[in-house]
Length: 418
Image (cartoon, rainbow, N blue to C red; front, side, top):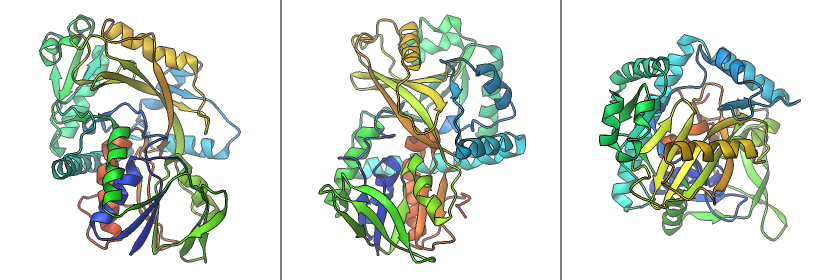
C-alpha cells in the first residue's frame, strides 16, 4: 500500500527504509531541504543501549531542585505559561516511582538492543559508512556514589544481555590513551564494548539516498499544515509545497515521525501525545592532535556530557533544557561544553572555532517512545518521543513500525502505543 511518512529525521527515514523493503510505496514529507537537518543533525553520536536509563527516577525530583537557578545545569527547567509543559512535568513526577523506573528501563533496553542489531544488519547489507566506531562507550564517574549507582544499573541490566563492566581508573588508559590524564581524578568508570557511535546526520542522509534509489519519494521544502480526516480515518495531509501553493497528499496509511512537533499535528484530531521538547546542545571541533583525542565514545556522567570521535571531528554534546519550542542558543550552556572538553582533552582539538548547534529532542515523561497505531484513526501510526535516544533506537523503531503496518508480528516484546 501507499504510506506517507511525515518527518525525515533518523526515525522517519529508518521507517521509510523498512517500509520500502517490505514492498510499500513510500512518500516522505519534510519542511527542510534535505534529511536530518533538525534534531538528527548534530547530536552526541552515541548508540548507547547500556545507558538506557530513564530520567524519571526516585532521585530525580531532588536533583532537579538542586539544579534550579543554575544556567549551566545539566537539566534546566524554564517555566512557561504553557499547560502542556506543566502537564508533562506532572506526568514526569508520576514516572519517578521505582516500579515505573524498572518497567520503563526494561522497555528502553528491549528497543535499544533490537535497534542496535537492526543497525548492524543494515550496515552489513548496505555497506553504509557514517564515521562509525564499534569499540564501545566508556562512562566516567567522579564520586563513589555515582559509581555505586552505575554498578546497580549494570547489575540490573545484565539479565537483558547488557555487558557493562566496572573499570578501575588505572585501567582507563589501556582502553583509550586520551583518558590517561583524567583517570586519577575519577572514582571509576564503566565500559560497554557492545555500544557504538557515529554521525547520525550523515547516516540519515546516506540512508535517505538509498531509500530514493529504492523508489522512496521525498518531498522536501514542503510544510505540513494539518492532518485531514473523516472522523474515523485520515484522508490526506494538507501541505504547502516549494511553489507556495496548498495541496493535499493522499495515502492508505500515515506515519507521524515529526519528533517534538508530532503533538502539534495530533492535538486537533483529539489525540493528545505526552511529548515535549527538551533542547539539547552540541559543539563540534576539528581534531588537531589525533593522538590526544579520544578514540572511544565517552560519557562524562558527572556533567552529563558525551564525547564522540567522528573521523577528524570531536563532537561534544549534552544538557537538557525544558524551554518550549525555542531553538535559541544560550551562550552559557555552549561555553560549558567547550570548557569541559578543554578540561578533559586540552590538546586534542581546535577549541577556538566551535560549531555550536541545538536540537529539540522529543521527550516523553517515561523516556519510552510512542510507537504503534492510533486507535481512534486506524490508518494513523506514531513513531515519536525517543528523547535523547533517537539515534540509539531509530533503526529498530523504524523496523518495528514497518512490521506493524505490514501486518507482521512485532519482533520484540514492546508495549505498543494504544
